[in-house]
Length: 365
Image (cartoon, rainbow, N blue to C red; front, side, top):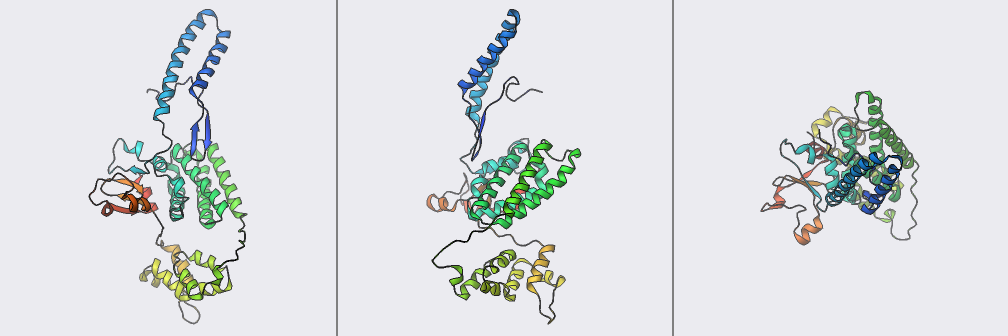
């Protein structure tokens, strides 16, 4: 089959790591200078006849490499202005080349999404689902993008001390999956060199240790604090939480919040939000006095049934254009920008939110 990559005689490019990925840093002139030195060194050890043949081949190779270098500089796009990707409706020859997780990570700019507090939980949940079920299907590019985004998430948590529990759960699932897959290396279950995956596992263990040693620094603030709010406002805040662990964590701050977090009515509302009444009957937990233990029931039901997912912002899918995109609400209000080149008469009626599991299903083939 034809070789579609760079010429095999090329020593390769020099790369430099930036915040947004790897970029080539070697100029064309430097490359040509190194080629001239390469030719001179070889001409010393060749005789006159071989040298003439060798020089002709090197001249041809130099021209070809210069042409390939120029072409690659023009066509290579490390970053995309459009933060959307077209998803094919049916299986085609182009589907595998253009509708992959790696391409989606490039186009949809997840690195910037984790900086938005509304999208942070969404991206973390997506990475967690990939760690559980789709790790073996990631290509080399998708692997690099995945761990690059994961590194940025860990560094963000270590810096601002927000959402450490979510990242600990993600890293735990990822390390457990990797340990199982690495043991089955004889079955070729992972794409890439096994040594690279072992290094990645060691990096994950380092991240886990850093998060384990994370200590919350007490902020000195002379202004109004959470403890200064009246009881009805604190109770209002607790009722807006959709995760039981968040309620427990907040209840550990002050004795007043702990008292409010143990309210039976609060846990009843939480159970009714996530689960159906038929599910209550199958897993009833009663106290000695015959009352329903709603707090214990919530965590018991959580083991058997999935909870409702709630995110500040998600990816959207346009049914008219078959395009997956981030919807920028500020641009939508100011410039009536839908986030992608939509041709529908009423674009908003064609948009539907995409859950993390639905996102993964879109790229299964």
